[in-house]
Structures are given as C-alpha cells and as structure tokens.
Image (cartoon, rainbow, N blue to C red; front, side, top):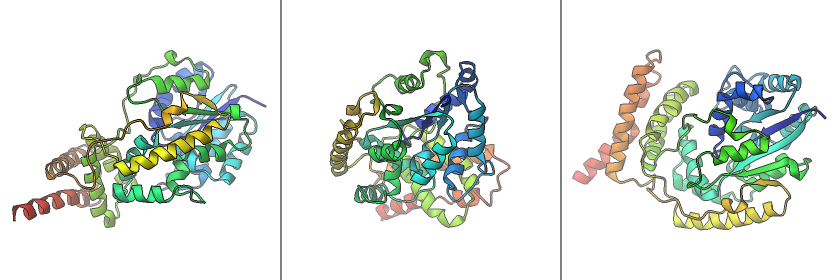
Length: 368
C-alpha cells in the first residue's frame, strides 16, 4: 500500500468552499510540506468529481471535465507523499462510482473525510444555495419535499448529499472505521478557524503553518435577497440564458453582491425545527453505534436553537422592494464590469426583473 489519500466528500454547506479555497491558496506550501492538493484551478476538484460521476452541472459540461478524474489520479499516484481530494459533489456518488474511485486509488491507503453540520442550520443554507443555482422552489415547498423524503429508498437528492449516516455507510463501506473521519462543524460562536484546525488535524497538518486569510466566499443570502433571487429565477426561467452566463452574472456576481448586504436570516418554521430535532437525535444515535473517528462532538449535530429571521416566501413589502432595488443596482454594476457579455443574452432578460414587477404590483394593490 502506498501513501495516504484523504478523500473529503462533503457535505455541502459545511464550510467546504472555505476549506477548498484555503487549500488552493496554500497549495504550494502544502507541497513543500509533502502534501499534494492537486490542480491549478479552484475548480479542478469540481471537474474531477463531475468526471467520476459522469454528470453535468445545470445541464452544462465544462470542457475541463473530460478526463479530469484520471488526470488527478495519475498525478496523485506519481506524487511521493500524501494527497487530498476535496469536493462536495462526490457526496452523491453511487456505489458503482465509489467502487471505481477506490479501485483507481488502490495504490493508496484511503481515508474518508466528512464534515457535518446540524440540520436546522443546514436547511436554510441548502435552500438558498439551490436558489443561487437557478432554483425556483419556494422555501416552504422545499421543506415539504425534504421532510416527505426522509428514509426514502433510493434516497431523495437532498438526503443523498446530506444524510450523514447514509453517506458514510455508502462511502465508508469496506474501509476500517478508524479511517472514516467525521468532523463536526462548530457552533456559530466558536473561533472562526476551529473548523480548519479540526480538518488540519485529521490530515496531520500544522494548522498554524498556512495562510488563513481567505476571503469569505459562498456566503449565505438573507431572506429578502434569497426571495428576490428566487423570483428572478422564476421570471427568467424561459429566457434560456446559458449556464456559464448565469453563473458568471448571477451566481458569482449578483448573489455575491446581495450576500454582502447583511440581510435578515432565513427563518426555519417551528414545526420544521421540531422534526429536525427528531431526525438529528436519530442520526447521532446511528453514528454513535459506529466506531468512526469523530473530530469535534456529535452533540454539535443536534440543533440547539431555531434559526429565526424572515420568511423568504412572505416578505414584508419594504424588505421586498429594498432587496429588489438592490438587485437592479447590482445588475447595473455587473453589466458595467462585464462589457463583453451580450445584453440580449443577460441584461434584457435579467433586467426585466420579476421581483421588481411583483413589488410594484403589490404596492399598487395596497394603494387601491
């Protein structure tokens, strides 16, 4: 058996983007210390995950995807030391895809790494992430679908990515329990670098030897901002804006600008909080029965407080109007900084903002 390969497969919305950017920023330092973080682009591991799973993202296949998994594995096999593979898209891999991954990595000792977050905080984050990826489902409909799909076989897409006991059973099958590392995401009041310290400890890295000054990315949207963006997706669904154009202008442009406004958080309804408690206690009981290497505390996976704020499906008129105007302002700024993008493919469709139109209609109805 060769060197160790740490395969961090998620879960989504558990600080994965933060960890990936930190690793990418420090890839040269990691190599100097003997650890390989493969790739010359931030998305290199994302492309490799798509290649392994033979999937497109929002119907689009980046030209870099073809052969990315094989290129990664070949470079890792040539590397004279441990390596890290890291992307949350791996989480939903099928057993056949996992078998292929392990077979391709048979030259190494594989360690599975999973980061987990309590379900009450995860649900609003997961919904708004879907919105940033062109989703149109309301928050309440999303919650209904997720709740109805608990313990469904085969797993519902949400649970295939987020059901910690199921993901670890699927990915950890055949691995010794002490090579399955479950890292719990610290509570909000914990030191900002604690997740990194836990992660670095699993990989045998000195957490203080690396540059931790990475910009906060993939920040969550506020309730009003997420609600407006969902309406925007709904009203432009038939515009056929290509995914790369949407991703550049909306996901990585508009959504990033709106996330920086610091709007009120998305509120999780009390009845949904109640069932997250039941599910979480059951999940922790299952995990406790396995001998995984737990880094942190399984108790951190049980929600202690209900997320409060605003209902993104029933926003106050002033919050809706304010977020809609901020959306238009952000779109103008994005258009100014991306002159090469055709206005017929983005501006004309996106500036005809459904959220603004609905806000005006609500104002008129109240005025009458």
